[in-house]
Image (tube, rainbow, N blue to C red):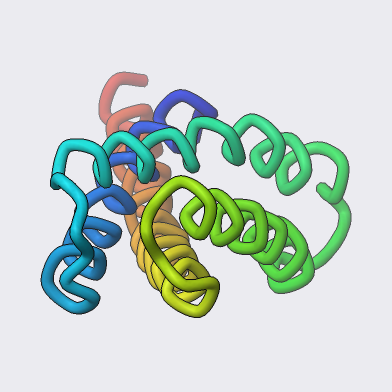
Length: 127
């Protein structure tokens, strides 16, 4: 999976989770547009750091260690951004970041695996 595809998947999955939690669960007094912008900004800030950390710098580490360090770093930074940029408590910021990242990482693994499998199938058909 390329970094650009991973970022697109991240944005497509994390922004709706942040909106759902912020507007429906926490009933935050913020416009959906502003919350969506902050959610997108958190991913745009952390993704350029987390992607090389997990794919290059820690390439030899087991997947669970890369996920723990990379996603843990993303959750911490994004929680801080939510807490400061949105009228959220620190706990709400952490929960929003944790849920959004867990959802996008888990589903990203499934999507990435499917892309890899189909790419190999197509490569076999075309050769």
